[in-house]
Image (cartoon, rainbow, N blue to C red; front, side):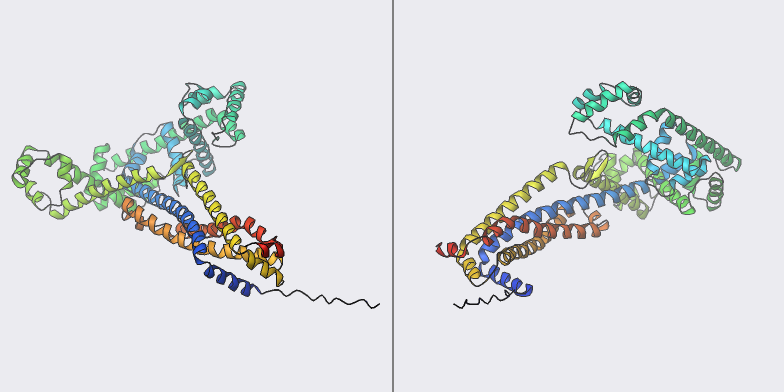
Length: 494
């Protein structure tokens, strides 16, 4: 008897482009069902994008405000460096600040005649101690009492230096799972043990800086440029170019790194500050009170008057001692300062701080985001399961025509990924627009001056990828169920 030969041919595989086209047709055919899945993704991604954008905006505006404040206080910082005696505590603060100021460590080394390596080591030590102090300062009352009792400030180092006290502290800290130490415990211990030596080295550096300040004061007096802080301020308010050039030569000899542009900046800031103070004092005089009441028929508080300096009538109130342009400049600086402080408070309210460092998302925002993602995945899974229920006969027909389990699985995953991509892009755009509108109302023009373009672009890519990933992950189980269905069983289901 002849045995029949069964001809088993290689299974035909549909190209990826054709499979992609079939997925698009399936989405279009079940548009309303696909729209339900799409809206779930859009809402979750829009919420994610809104949180990220607001955080990037707040960080960028905050950095810009910090830079402006630093620039505004330049004259104060320069005067403190040139003419004020510095204590070891002040020097420790300067060392911590020097870590984020380019060129500042080199200036400290030049003024104090210390080696750059020694200054870098002191900056690192002072920064570590600042982190430790922030850690203890930010503790709630209960945790602080459990760890160190009522001990505060410098006494903390003496308390934790003995081995038994340190072991007791570290043991308690391990059981407070919500608290994270500011650095690895071994390094923490090394900083505690090195506190006395670090304090002595910083005191030595402070003494060297004081000698430089004393020497500069003597040189300024010998050059007949002034004696005391009042004369120094008058020197910069006058802005005599020859005298300022002479002063610049003297500070360079002492190792200070300020440039001629910095000298000019100090002159401008002190001149405007002096003018503002003179205007305020004149407005508080009896003659100005009478003249103001005559011109405006009221006599408000001095701060209201200072905010109204751009009014042309104020020139007459002040007996034309200043021009309207000069008064308008003072008014503009006051208004800008008030606006900057308002925006700074808004930034502080929206930026989370963890151990003194600003983090992108607060723990509350991260929790809400996680909940939204879980709800999104549940919604997508539910929508996909309903879609599979409606497509039992389609799945059975495809299997009868030769579709493999892998092909069915890939089809559903590709379909979910397409919806995730579309929902991610739409959610990203919606979240971006909403966050821009909201932050414009809060930060005003500061948002566009310090707009974080790279950060927003990165956030957009992350959100689109999150939409695709969420949709794909949520569709794995429904897709697997669809791929494992027996053709005859699926055909029997109505």
